[in-house]
Length: 304
View 1 (cartoon, one colour):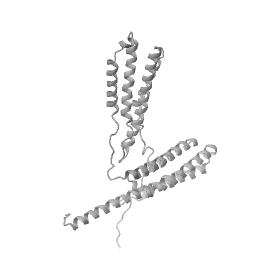
View 2 (cartoon, helix red, strand yellow):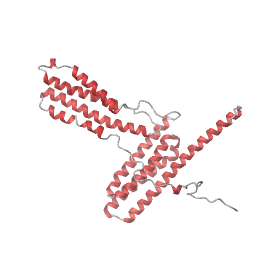
View 3 (cartoon, rainbow, N blue to C red):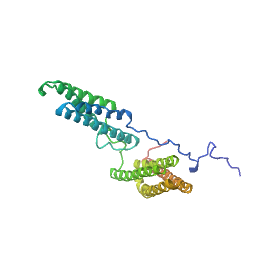
View 4 (spheres, helix red, strand yellow):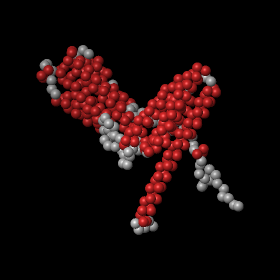
């Protein structure tokens, strides 16, 4: 009997799970959101501290407080940029509970105002003659420029329609613990002193984070993925710690091969679980569509 020829390179050929392309070295790489543009804001506080040391008790105190406010603003800005990047990376996310970037702008304005008042105070013959107009103007302008340069924090939730917030909070706690396991794996594997195996661990972590994102987008998948996020990751962390200690001392090639094989197995299982959850979501969508079609047909609505 005739049979149509087909294969993975044929037009109708569908690649199997084993034919999935391997991840590239930089697949899933994330850019540090708090780059040089944010880190440079730590600089103004440094000369302000040294310039204030010989200004007397009041001048020094004002200068040090202003430097502290500017430094705190820079720290808040870095954390705010990271929180915003995490918010943008997710399809559904809550707005940050604490508006770090807004408070960073306010602290920057206060720091600039105090630094300006310090100059006014030192130039005036008496404290009563020190003008407040210039410090206020400098503070307002600094706050406005900071807000324009770095923007505001996300002010509303994203993609939260139809999501059980209680279940999502449970997912957030589980994912946070899972991320801590991955961080511990990263710290442990550095002791092995092998850049290739470090890159291999990073590729596994990217696959694990794909599972994290899938569960976050649909918290109903938590029950099926919990053992992956807890038991399997804890085992991977413990195995990584033991391997790093052994390999750092002995450079045992067999230990390296066994650990690499473990990472391969874990990556395949995590990827398979992610694909299964995505297929389940698609099946749920198909059921919803079929139910709606049947209801419309019973009510006499034509779908032609």
